[in-house]
Image 1 (tube, rainbow, N blue to C red):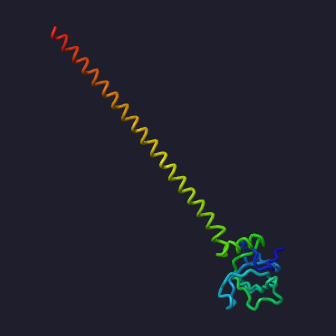
Image 2: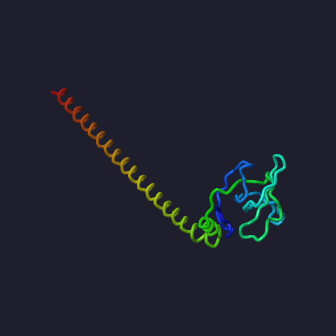
Length: 166
């Protein structure tokens, strides 16, 4: 049995066939109460009236003393509550409060993002430095090999010149 007496429970609602809704089920629906302006409401079914394929649900909030002034037409039904949690509802309300959301959620998130950005930039610099060092080593190796070839070519050329002059 689900009691939404605190009005702050977080509920999971499952779409349900109209004929599967029974008295004492808790349903969520778009309210036809002008004071609620079509907002989603969740109340317990007190009784059901049928007219062919059309169902009208008479509902009452668990914390209310009287049934709702406006019936719920089946077209406005979202579904039946299959699970609810007061703790989850309190957490959702707490996190949705800007005075709580900014210091508890946004500030740590900003710190994490900045720390990751610093780490990424540092890592990118290290990679760039390693690549630069590798390129310099490769260039030095290339120059050494080129100088050796030129030295070998010069030595060979001098030897050939000496042989010709003999």
